[in-house]
Image (tube, rainbow, N blue to C red; front, side, top):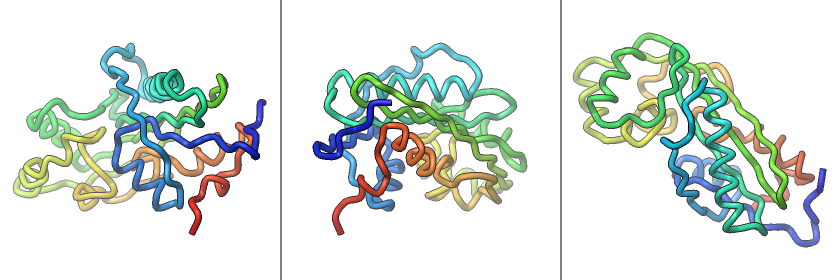
Length: 203
């Protein structure tokens, strides 16, 4: 393992446009640079959900590494695994409505892939959290779809926004459902020779 030189700490870059991931890092005291990868997710071959999130997270991190070879770069991707099917962002409101018809009163697994790249070395980890969905009424679901929130996120729901009211419980790491597991990030940083507190912004 090639440890990061503590004397010349590289910038930490989040290779994601997700405001939820950025907010989660900021709440944990980390202020990353944001560089969107531009990876075409539809071009990544479909496979089982756990493999897919790993491939997408790696593709995003490596794409940004070509632009910022100096940086420590985190790529992430999330999908809802429902009956073995990978559900990313819905195509439109009708697609989101159909998904909720399947999800309501049931459980699915939110899977998030993480890839941390620096200096040509990359480490990856996928995490999984079981999500137990409630049964929103037709009126509630119509209002939720009208808000536009489920159209912007994997699985057509959030745990940190309006959608949280329709999630009865989770089993696992909350951050995985948001789209970035902080314990996974800590483990990946350690493999690069970095402690997570070394990324904390000054108080």
